[in-house]
Image (cartoon, rainbow, N blue to C red; front, side):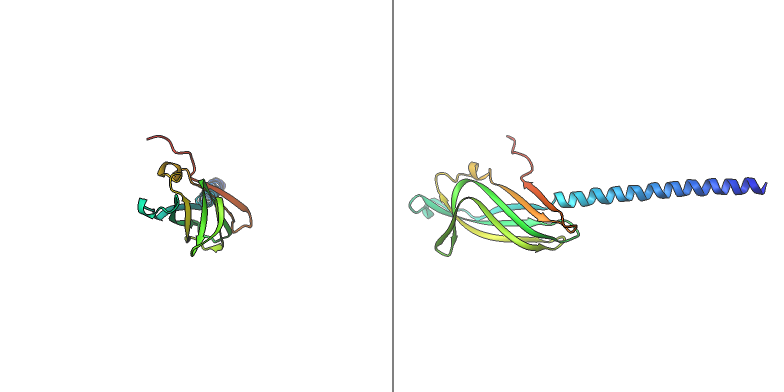
Length: 166
């Protein structure tokens, strides 16, 4: 009888170990999935802080002020963050009253963004009034590259998918 009780106890212990191991495996899978989503969730967003009016146009040019944000939703910091925004129209960046750079790409950098934090840049961009329509500016896109806490280079693109007609 004692042998039967010992055998039963051993079987119950083995089943308990199996379930504990299974739970640990599930926990690790969930944590990996969560970490992957934190990396994929590092995003850039942008919005015009001020849009010009007809009366602001000078020689066919007008100035928009944009806020560009990068959000790190993860628990850990990311570093060597680079945001490359692609515009559908040419622009010139203004610093004070001086045009500094021009083209269709705007690049901003940040050495470190803490976990759960964000960084905002403000930029004044001069564009051709008749080219910079709301429809065209809706096609702005951004790429975010950064190095995660494990030292791996990561990349996200925003918006994730092309806009569909409503």
